[in-house]
Image (tube, rainbow over all chains, first blue to last red):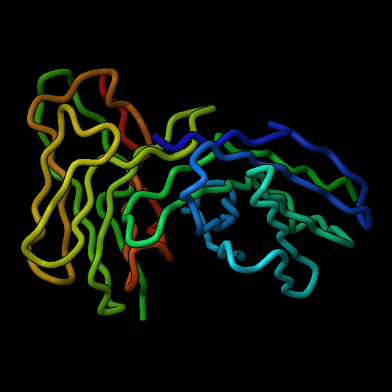
Length: 112
Length: 111
């Protein structure tokens, strides 16, 4: 079955710097890759997603890139702000599958 | 529009006790899910319901049962709680299979 690995497990950046979180997946049939942000004591919130027919997607300060050949995808956050501090999860899924396979999470700390 | 709601928010059980976690969504989504979240392990799917009247096992179904009561509600039952079931439980829903929206979670401690 699908396996998703996420790195790093913790990431500390200065406010205004960029942050990059990387995930690799094992099943080449996976074609949907969402990213979730989880703040302390809350449920995961979908922040951006990408499908395999697209190499990059942007939404303001957030972008996701996908390399299907290498089977990895990354979350890029530019001009980080303290409110970006949270745990971020990547996930992978196949068409028509109801099963999202999650990475283990990255705790991002943005220092003021 | 409350999205996905879960009750209770927090529960303490003794080993062997039973309980039901409740989930409801008001987004008219077809599919609903139950996940557990443990430290360092991300979220793992317990059960899901693709549509009203159907339920299927996920990655970690042992020790749990589910009921899709109607289109809005999906409950998770622990018949005989064990300390290994101490976790945070999240319910989610989706229109299409992949784009899932999560509730605020239920924190369960089994002593």
